[in-house]
Every structure is written in structure tokens, then in C-alpha cells.
Amino acid sequence: MELEDTPFHLDDVLNHVSTVIRPMAEGKHLEFRIEPGPDLPSALRGDPLRLGQVLTNLAGNAVKFTESGEIVVGITVEGADDLSTTLRFSVRDTGIGLEAARRQHLFDAFTQADGSTTRQFGGTGLGLAICRNLVELMDGDIGVDSTPGRGSTFTFTARFGNVDTIPAAAPAETRAAEAPRLDGVQVLLVEDNEINRQVAREILTDAGATVTEAENGRAGFDMAMSNARDIDIILMDLQMPIMDGFEATEAILECLGDAAPPIVAMTAHVMEEERRNCLNAGMKDHISKPLSSTNLLSAITRHARRRVDAEPVPPGTPKPEANVTSKLADVPRESPYDLTDAVERLGLDEATVIEILNNFRDRYRNLRDDMAPLLADGDLAALAALAHSIKGASGSIGANRVHAASAALEHAARDGDDAAARRLAVELDEALAALGHALVAAGHSAD
Image (cartoon, rainbow, N blue to C red; front, side, top):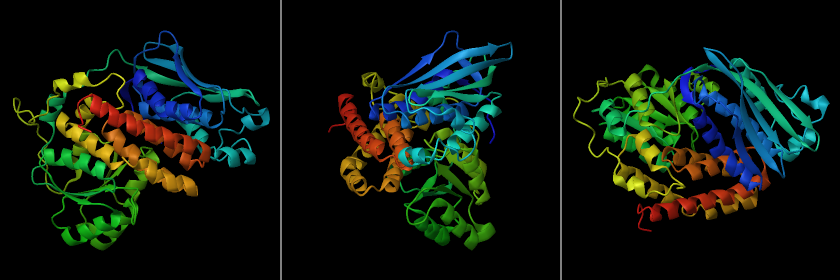
């Protein structure tokens, strides 16, 4: 695993952790809160993604092994000098706790409290081994203090570079003017989720590309076989029915060899291991979801067979209708969606993002009926796949409450936690209903 070294806001990491963990905790009627200590730096340099992964893993485990009470995340300054700051993070729960004999091997791969714990709560303990590795890469250490029946406190330290300030992001209209043009570029988009296809299609066609769509890996393979010479790049989702992205990539490369268009993966998995898996499969790059116009257009600029004019549009010629309108002021502060974020990240005009939000709401209007037979049959694998699909689409369009609820449901379903999955399925259905109500309240939907 490798760490990034980039400026970031600590609050952004903590807010993301809260967005993911809070629905999981509320689904079990647990209190969840974050308690930052005094004098915390607002801006740091390091790897915010890896820090968030450690915190989310520890807090997610705390929820999993706690049936009543609370989960508390604390942050304090451990030490600082002119160049760096070391922070101490703690995740405290009121769960089942651990015996001393079990604690010493807890951070070894595939180790958990005992076999009965694995059967009752799911999981292998591999996440804690990864946490240990990540913490050590951040020049820190990790440990646990626990009493059986009274809960656990996981604590780790991490060192980050000091940053005075982080430059503000450029306005959406400025970024749109600086975006590369893809005029004449032929893109084959292989993605099973229609909302993700719409998001990608809008970004690509806005930049001048021509987009052909395939709903699964098999259809993508067939299109690549019939039109390989004209395709400049293939965007390939990984988790798809009939034929997944890895299988489709292998088949395309086996049949076409050097004549195959460059293939770029699109996936919600952002671990370095997943990126290496994509490269080892013959893909040229790896784009993470939720999608952003910057990452998507940059990848195509780097890898498309047709030369892309990466020069910015001359000043004074901004993208038509790229400005955020005054409708943003009508969005409730506690809205289940963040229109400002989606407009800025996707580089699309507000009307297009609102249209996609409404399409998303309509696509999953009957989600309760879709989940009911999966829950009745105990098919948690299918439920996790459904939640995963919703997670990627909702994150791309700023439907934050749905994104958090679907992420929590996917986590519970993959861990085999049937009781939590049932609670979180209700939470996800309620989040979708709240999205619809908020769209109507803001005047963004006629329904």
C-alpha cells in the first residue's frame, strides 16, 4: 500500500466518517458522536483517504460489536513541531469487549476474538491488520484497551505534515473553462447502473465526446468486437451482471491483442490493491466513484487513442449554462442532497444535475419491493450488490443521505449481519423517501 501526500482538511475526513457510520449506529439505536479536542489544526498534509479508511473500519467494527450504548470518536494533538503534527485518535464503544489473551493477536491477519464471535458478528479481522499497516505507514502505532462485557477503546496515532492554508477550489465556471475538450473522441461506456451511465454520459458529451453505452460486460465485449477500430477508449465498470469488468477486459484483450482500445476501470473500490488488480488485468488506469469530471476527463486525456486537446478553452468562453443559479438558496440546510457539491464536482449545469437526481429517485422508487424478496430469502449477497450499485450512483450525484445508508447496508450485508441489514434496509428506504420530499420542497421536482 502507498500513501498520498496532499493537503486536506481534517473536518472533511471526520464529516465523511460521520456520514458513513451514523446511519449504521442509528440502525442499531446506538448513539454516535465525534469529540474533537482543543487546538486541532484545520489543515494538514498527508493521505486523507487512508486516515478515513482506518477511522471508518474501527468505528464500523465498534458498531458491529455493540448492541446498546454509544460509539465515540475522539481526536487530540499528541505532539507538534515546525514541520509536522501527530494526532491521537480513539474509537470507544460499549460493546462486547475482549479478553487480554485475545488482544495481543488482534491486529494479525485473519484473527478475531473467537469462532463464536465470527459466527455471531461476521468478519475475519483482516480489516484490523490493514489498519495496523496503514497506521504504521503514517508513522504511528495502534492498540486496544478492552474489558469483556464493558466495551473497547481502539487508539492510534498518525503524523501529518503542517499546512498553513489550503487554496480554495476554483469556481465551477472557471473549472469548466479549463476542462479539456474531447471533440471527436469515441467512448465505449460499459456500466450496468443507468444513473452512473447518465452521469458519465453528460460529462463526456458536454466535453464533446461521442458515447456508446453497454449495460453489462458481455454487451461491452460484443460492441468492442464489432467496432474496435473506431473506439478510442473503453470505460469499464467492474461489478456487473452476466460478465464483470475483469472478465470483459480479459476477453477483449485476448481477442484483439494490441488492436484493443485502451480500457480504464471505474470502481467504488479505492484501495491500492484494487488499482493493481486493474493494471494487472491489462487496464490502463483506475477511476474511483463517486465520479468527478476532473478525474474522468483527465483519464481520457491520458489514455484515449485519439489525441485529446488538453489545452483549456480560451478565457472568456465558459461552458454554456455552467453557472450555479439562485435556486441553490432554496435547498434546505438539512437537505438529503447537496446540489452545490454535485454541480461543482461533476462540472454540469444545475438543471442537468436536478434531472439526474429525479431520474435516480424514479429508478429506485420501488426499492422496498425490490429488497423484500432478498430479505425474505436471506440473500445478503444480492442485497449487498444492490446496495453497492445504489451507493455509487447516489454518491456521484450528491444524494448524501442515500449514499450513507446504502454504504452502511452494503457493509452489514457483506458481513452477513442479517439483523443490521434489515434495519438498514428500512433506513435506506426512508432516505430515498426523504430525497423525494426534499426535491419537491426545493422546487426541483413536480411530484
